Length: 370
Length: 267
Ligand SMILES: Cc1ncc(C[n+]2csc(CCOP(=O)(O)OP(=O)(O)O)c2C)c(N)n1
Ligand code: SF4
Image (cartoon, rainbow over all chains, first blue to last red; front, side, top):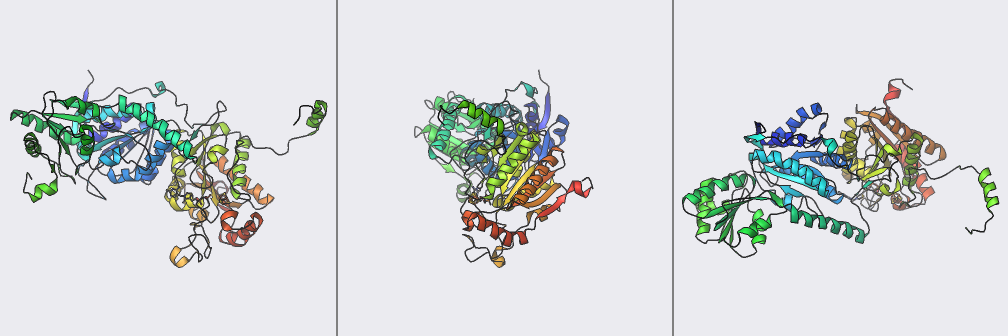
């Protein structure tokens, strides 16, 4: 058995990246992902890699673009406002079919927002990580162990499908310490060669081009359609979700990351009260695990989405459920963390057949749970 | 050519003729999108000639950001990366850090380098990033149809300074070589132009030096080429050079602004 070590989530992300063969890291300081960059700054030079503090997130993501074009496994990390700035580079990476791992340890927004944990960037991650017709794969860990495990998957899927991959964590997961069994380091020489890389043709092949510009409309459509076919394969093959007590569940909670941890406790409490509650925890947010939602539809009487936001993922749940059951929402935003008891109240309401959007504004007005 | 041409005669011609001028190997046979008389065509060729002379095509990766030269990825035979507007120095940094033994160059316009990408430029320069930057200063945004650039001259009429660049409201042009020459990471900062055979030769020498300094690991090099945009200036190619000499060169004097080897008395 692999020995477990006690680590912060942010550090686990960094160490796992090194073990996945990542030797290039470009970042810009921002709370609450600081420990990740600090860990990289310390370890990278010793591992024969490059840690570079860029002049901005814009520069950092474009360094990632260059390093990825050269064929390397490369990572950047930031938090919400910084990820907004990376949007341009992410769009170009999507357009040029460049893989890389982008970490977003989310904090509250919009604007400068706050530095407390949040899940307010779901839309940015799953809908618009930059302009254009494109997607990134989005993973949502909910334990420190998963922070470590998903980094390896992120590099692997990125390389396989030639798409950028985002790990959407939050300040709570980034800062918390848990025991973690680190994955075995891979030998990066064993990775398949990237034949498309612009690393110098050495007189052995015609020149490679990394590009996202297509001035002929038909050519642009062709490349976007080809990429969409890869997206379709990703949707078919890469959906990931964990279920907890969903087999006979009448109230099915859907929550990811930190919100899933709280929801799980609330589900256990509901079961003690005799309410048949269960939890679906999406591990991939894009592709959204619609297949898992489908498995609970026959028994479920209602759905309850819990998020650290005003309700973003709930739209995907509603799309997946497609009117077959009521879908309610409960959340807090701005860094306010819902308590399991608050979630329990929401479960009870849902169990009684109510459909609601219970957001902080309402709770305050109605003198509700908090 | 018809197949009936006398092959013996052909052979004779072959023996006597010597190739004096041909396309550099580092250029593909793609037809460029540059307007007639534009400096881009000349400078792009000079870069290719230098790549040929140094024999580095197989190890070279070029970065072409947004601007009239954005399609240079089709024109060069070395590996090429197209970059977002202004981000070439950051993209080149990523490439060079992964491929320290390769030669990485970025080919940037003035809107690209001195406006939207100024932060990336200054920081790549001050980090002493071992890359060679070819900087086309044509005092205008060419690709988007002739808007004011950070390098447009006081009083210069452009699409977005229709009454002439008013320094009260639009400020002053940026002298990039002067600015960058204050940074310790810069190995070479030189301003050239390509308006005469003599100046073309000087420009090529400078570009070659920028590549050599990179290969020697000396730091960031920039060759600023004071250039023309006949199309958006609204001049014939020869009048454009005339206007450039009369108006741009006084504001942007040619010369070497920094050369760490010369400073150390090494040459
Ligand atoms: C983010 C972004 N903003 C604006 C543009 C539009 N744009 C394309 S080229 C260009 C200016 C290019 O001018 P310059 O860098 O001077 O190069 P030139 O075309 O003169 O060679 C602009 C503003 C863009 N492509 N991307
Ligand atoms: S628009 Fe100007 S800079 Fe662009 S190719 Fe034409 S002449 Fe050259």
